Length: 610
Ligand SMILES: [Zn+2]
Image (cartoon, rainbow, N blue to C red):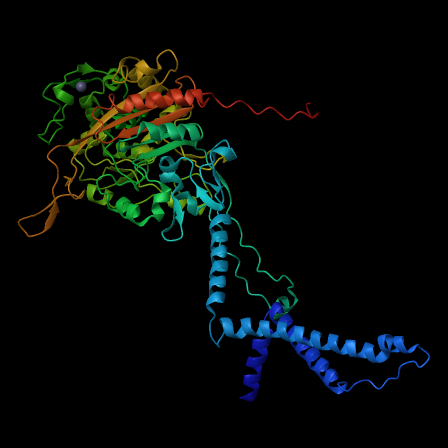
């Protein structure tokens, strides 16, 4: 029993760290010193009995005699003792009475709080890394620190334009997006032995580690331009390098100001805006019907199945898949008659690609979708639960991989899928659901010299990695011809072709998709609901279909350096809204020299140049 207590005590003593033990030793020493001083002061309190040198003249005997000296020494002794006593008392007061078990002192509490705030400020301002764009220019960082009016502030120079990539970092709401990836790792928690504690002379705990800086593949100016193109619209843009998978711009609109996250009323507004969903990244976390842009996948599958010389008939009454009794029609009842692949792709014929997809059948269409990076499901219901794709990015950064993980784009090709269903999927309607990022990757596969879908990359300087081979190099070359034809004389010749003609050769594909959307109550900003016959509350769907506008493409045709997907909700026909946006951004990319193939690195010269 007693030994147990002793062990506990000695353990308690040994587990104390050096500063504490040092203080203990100091205090003991001081107390000893004070006691000895008092003791000596007491013992020699009597006047000295030493005699003055009788040989001195009488007037000097008084001034220089030992009696006087010893008297002065006594005063010094008392003064010193009092000073030490005062210091000791001061120490004891702060230690015991200010915050200790014997009470709290308001002044001290205030002082401590101020000091804590300083710690908090330090936590806020020094632990996160900076986030740079592809040029690693400190003046144009995407997330940095700024010193303003005596305060250090986390600054997001592009604000809402990068909000869905950078995210936010606040004390109250935590952190999101890549701000999480540049946070400091948790401090090491390894337990020190008592000997290490005794011999560790550093009085301050080691400074917490600082988060790693992150250089992104994003181009500052292109990103800003992309966000500007989407202003006052709902939509998303992804622009990437199809040879490397580097994301050059990834914008979603509307965005949010990261500074608003800290403000309670604006935070609530951001959270409750169901109609606009400003915190949602429409580039990676929202599904869209791809419409005619998906004919790119169907055409590639057809070319690799050696069916690119097929000729189908397009009629005013539509094509009725066997066994369905329901026709698939072209827009506005168009009739293209007997038509081949190049022409069908150029004018975006629905019936051609519905028939091609149906003839390719479920298995080959499913395999093609899988090679393009889509996740293939047996039924539409299953595909609704697809979730988020892990390990989608070309990165070893688990945090980046996690916060940026996109929704799986899906294709349905199970046994229950009819020819009618497959026909619809082949023209980007029905069961298919894609993200804007995935659509950019499909355009990128056609633009890639090997027909590869490159793993998307956000971190600068990584080795490009192919996710899968979507099509043969032959099919990719053929696809580029089809897509160039769309821009030269097809559905994108006017709005897009007119903008870039004579400056850039590009290929592309327009798309328009109609979907049912909830009816939003303008008063509350929330979907309207109704009670159905069984008594359940249901969301009322709008009678008007929402027409989303798409344009995907790549440039330059001869040596593609950029591929993109532009999607604008309620944008009407793809060629009208999405195509000019892509055109403007392509001109911007050209001015930023992003369309030039990378020059081989000059070997560093042996002699320094002057
Ligand atoms: Zn047609």
